[in-house]
Image (cartoon, rainbow, N blue to C red; front, side, top):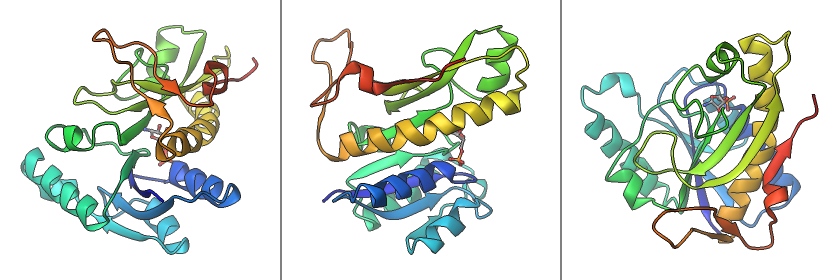
Length: 217
Ligand code: GRF
């Protein structure tokens, strides 16, 4: 049984998706805690409804990122986290925290990485005239929105799309690919590329096709 901690900043719909799939599929792994960087994060209420403890580490109270990360780390240790999921967590996390949880820390990012790392991805995809957009679940490295890719969703961009309609369509796919990737990682099925140039992650019993969710136009 792996102890999963989910980190959030807002609504928490990805947290909810993980909890739903974990219960439907009767995972042997458990979400033991939630960490939010804002007291107002609505996802805290979802955690409470599910009987999961939520700790708040309010980033606004910290003058220094290292101190903020130090307190996040303390909470992760308190929860005895085996695996950490950044599910709409909007703060950058760096070393030494990221290296400590290397291979056990994943993130969902609302774009087809390596395109559009950072913020406002949906608006930027529209501005670039992209024909496809999507979401990426990846292992976290100390470089923002970078790291071995576990799963991606490809969402066509419609000519009528606004950042909001595109975000909503991408979000639905996030709710599918994130829980899958969390379960692969928790099951210990992920093998990182061994050669220095990186390359594709291998996942036991999962074909590359199953790691890709594609929406029709
Ligand atoms: C998601 O689109 C996530 O990829 C992005 O912020 C959004 C969070 O949504 N970083 P929620 O809090 O999981 O509902």
